[in-house]
Length: 384
Image (cartoon, rainbow, N blue to C red; front, side, top):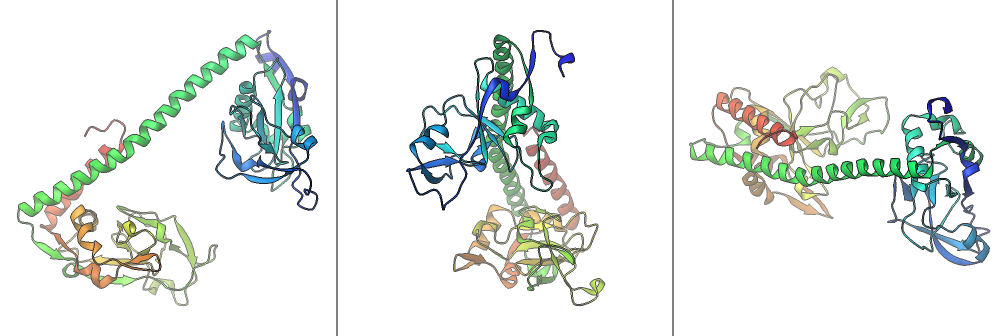
């Protein structure tokens, strides 16, 4: 490493330039003395920040309270879980302690805490840190291994300059993420406006109101048998696989059929519409997605409803869009029943839903235009 660094930089083991302390062992039989304190576990230390939403407690004697204390500028490093994950404590004086799943790295005056944290992030991202792990299946970063990590150390002024540059770049990244989070609901609102406008204009143009029962050749609930979490078996979609406008074919568990798979009545095929029949969230009941890109057998569970359409009168992409309109959702709301906190709709009630239905050619035109609008809304360079 040193041959590629400026001559003013040093390379030293972390234990030479910082004080390392492993946290307190969690032993309920021995933890009977001292005062109760909240403490940090590895789940509380994220990359570059802390999650204090779920803090555990245990007893610390006065000596332990001092030994396992946390001060501003301490770097907390995960020993297990995701070894090497680190964050710098900047929360001021705190009564929080830390347990054995964490190391506390308290740097000397020669080393900035943020420099340590950024360097650990770097070697984690490049997988260089893995050479310091112990264990085959469950990886750990013991104190001796952490202390032996060689750290490149620029002069303090250069450390501050580099850290400031990194933090400025991270700030831009955080701002970009915040902007995307702000844009996402706006884009969703825009898509809904485009969708509603298309169908309301269609109604004004005289598209006939047609119940789904008149265009469906089949409406069938899925398999009621409880699936397995692991193979063998044919992949069966989870309820979460179906959301408005999409079907995730990889969101599966496994069904072990009693009969020949080729004759299985619940096999899906491209163009099938799937509706959520039952869900704890009423807003997701009757959510509809089209099966697309099927390359291997898939079946579906009882909490989904499969609808197949007569291709001479309706195409699935159009119907998928039609049932997602605000008007359709409002009309379906009265058919959604609630029991014990769960919400559901029957295939019979679903078939009663009326949608404005033009000719098949017009359906293709509208579905294509809606796809373009959706892609435009999702693209950072898309123009509304």
